[in-house]
Length: 337
Image 1 (cartoon, one colour):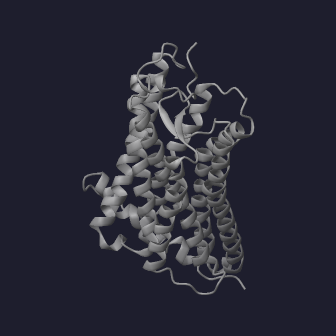
Image 2: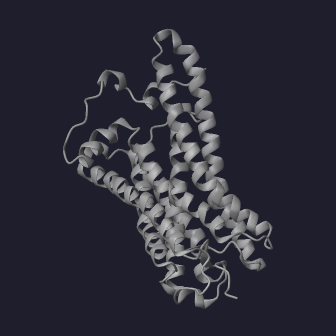
Image 3: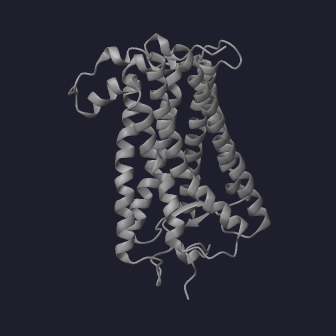
C-alpha cells in the first residue's frame, strides 16, 4: 500500500505514485480550476502595482495598503498558484523535498501578509471614520509602518518551520505544500496552534471589530443626516456593499481552510480524503483574485486608471462624476455625538 498524500515519505517527492489520490482527469480538472483563478489574479494584481507606479495621483498613504496587498497576492499567485497548475498537470509534486519547503514558506509568507494587510485596511478605515482617538490624519509614515509590520509579522511566524519548530509538508492531493496540520508531534502541534491564533484569529478579530464599529458609526451618522438629501445614506450603502463583499470573500476563502486545519489538529486520527483536504486550500488561494476586484474596481480612484490600462488605453463608458464626487470615507468623516 502506498503512503497517503499527507505522509512525509520521501517517495512522494520523486515522481508519480503507483496509487495516486486522484485520477489523471481529476488532476487535470484541478489544474484548470487553479489556472482559472491564477491567470486573472496575476493580471489584476500586476495592474494595480503598475498603475500605482505610473500615476502619482495614486501614490497616497491610503492606497499604500492596497498596493501592498496586490504585491502579496501577486506573490501568492506566482508561487502557489502557478506551481499548483504545473504540479496538478503532472499529477504529482515534482520539486522534491526542498521545493516543497520553499513553496510552503513562500505561499504562507505572502498569504499571511495579505491577511494582515486586510486587517490593516480595516483598522485604518475605522480610525479615519470613527475617530476613536480624536482627529487623526493618516500619513505616509503610518502607511509604511503598517506595511512593514504586516511583512515582519508574517515572516516571524513562517520562519520557525525552517528551523525545526513545525514543518512544511504536502497537503491535499499531494501537489502543493503548507504548514503540516497532520503531525501528532506535540512540538509541531504547539506551532500550529500558535500559528492559527496569531496569523488567522487575530487578523480576523481585528477585521470584525473594526468594521462593526465602522458600520455602527455610519448608521448613526446616516440617521442624523438623512434630511440633507440622503448623501450620507448613499455613502453608507457603498461602504456597506464593500464591507459585506470583503467579509464574505474573507470567510469563503479562508475560514474553510482554517477550520479544517484546526479540526485535524484537534482530531489527529480523523480520516480526511485527499480531495476534501484540497478544496479548502484552493479556496484560500482563490482570494488573490477577489481582493483586487473588491478593493480596486470598487474604488473610483484606482478604477479611473486601471480600467483603461487593462483595455489598452480605451475609455469605458463615462461615469456620472457628480454621483461619485465624494468618496464614501470622505462623506462619513463626521463622527456622531
